[in-house]
Image (cartoon, rainbow, N blue to C red; front, side):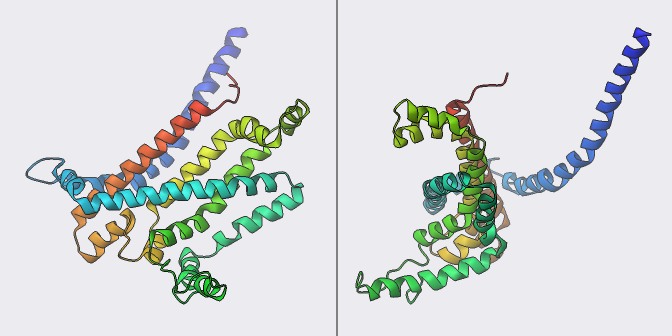
Length: 290
């Protein structure tokens, strides 16, 4: 009787494993076809050169202008991440400590701008940041400046648009992490004499490390690969890697160069996200469940 029950259990486990495999195969096939196959199609032209396999990549990196575009893209992404984190952390902390009903309403308000198309939002920033825009008129009315500032079509305008675009993502990520924290730990620290500032940096921030880095990874990856915001607010004089890809492919018809830029962008983004995840794991002070 005991042997037969064991055989039944083993048979059920094998059937469950087979069922899991059958369920995974369609999803894996879809990912393979719609994700990896296009990447392979992009990568193949970059190695079709008579001189050397990596000659196209070497030629691309030897160009000073291309290196400047990579540096500009990386700098804009890092700056956006830092600003979004500084702005999003106190807002997230305030939202997470509200009552449940209030927190839900505030979370909806934070996500509401994402319901509007990114093109429409970026054109709104043109009205605000232009030479005859709202911001310049405000500064001149207060006599802060004598002449309109050239904010539009600069790196600053791209960063402003990116911050506005990705701030809700950072706040949403942090609110979820803060809501899971035990507030009694902070209360105990206060009883033991810790100041609010010390409690924030020594107790709250270490516990929020995974949430912070998750938000940073999402914002960094989105900013590195964004096209609409740099194209509308940056123009043709301040190209980033995504707009450079469009220029090479659609304007100049150089698909091989566009493929090289796309692969370089993917490698930089993936490597940067891997480094941030490693740092997140090293700084994570939460007790392991193992």
